[in-house]
Image 1: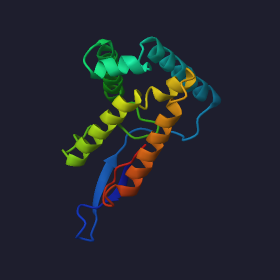
Image 2: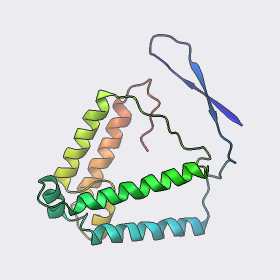
Image 3: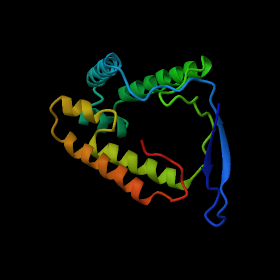
Image 4: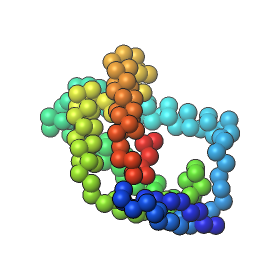
Length: 174
């Protein structure tokens, strides 16, 4: 089954090029069963628990990481990267579709200076707030009220990206 979608190659020409995306997998239903939702909540609970136990939600630990005083969180981040890489490799190896029913896209990204700006903004926000999107909900669950401001900052950042991203970009935010 092939799915065609239109992609603008440049802002000047009005003709659009067609890109063919092949998918050998069945279409996965967008609705989730109650048991799937329960499993996701359970995984989220354990993810938050381990983030809390690893001190990834502690403002002082994060500041010490950015000041190169404590390297424990670098190990936590490295372990997370290895687990995700293994999961992506196995998903690709056994040709498991994503929830959208499509195969994983392994195309390398081209360098864009705006990504560097975004990465610097993300890092600065992480250092100032003492939280990233992965830990902010755990902080909220721990009763750290300042997490509400981080969540508001994330929402503003997503809104700003949606508002000012290039119109010919086919990037999605979430």
